[in-house]
Amino acid sequence: MSLTVFGFSVIGLRNRKLGLKCQDTHRVWADTDRACVVVCDGAGSASHSFIGSLMVCNLVLNAMRKEMETEAIIRNLRERLSKKAKALNIDLSSLACTLLAVYVNKDEYRYIHIGDGLIAYNKDGKIQVLSEGFRGEYANETVFVTSKNVEDYVISGNGSLNGITTFFVMSDGMEQAVYDRKRNMFGNILYKLVNYMSDTQDLKRLKRFIKRKSNMFYERTFDDFTLAILKRG
Image (cartoon, rainbow, N blue to C red; front, side, top):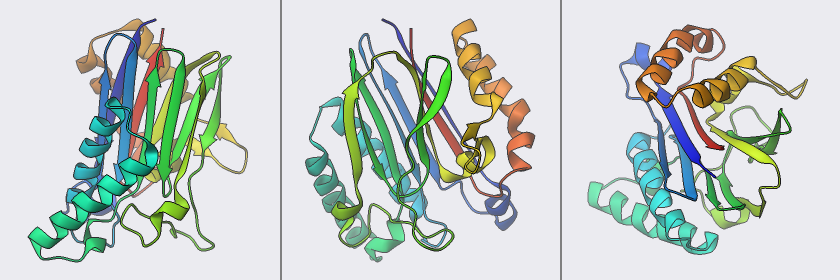
């Protein structure tokens, strides 16, 4: 079994116009029979969310490679973020971000999801939702890694791959661009990306393909958008 990972983060129109940094971060990693993809979306209302997003991405990738338990991962995140907030003399909430991660080891997978965004998978040629994360009663209401009692809002699970060929991990901005929630349908762009990954191992060509499609994403969301893909076979 071969494993291929790929990801991209693109600054949204809103942050571009405001002269802000992209608040999304992603990390991808693969070796012979293990792989991990992580996506973090910094809260727009948090002043240092891009720092929190980057920290959480790096910490979770390393933790999942070490196969740490979910509870230990969350506890470590809180401790490290609290120390960072203290060092910067800011509130912990200023580092707020969501977390989505998928880890594959041979024929098994596990995932962790805190906040909004979406985790999906391709099985038998059809893309399906694995986790919709947490969404509150009102629009844009969610939880973050830095939220009080975040342990109560962690969505996690594991299972056998059993025919799953691809995982898609995306921020809520990317979700808005490629997923029709009412019809429970995904855009053809995801299928094209999977085919493109099968046809080429040249990531530069793949990145150029994404760049050509960016205008389509911009037509559907003002938010930053991030997608990480983990493909088997």
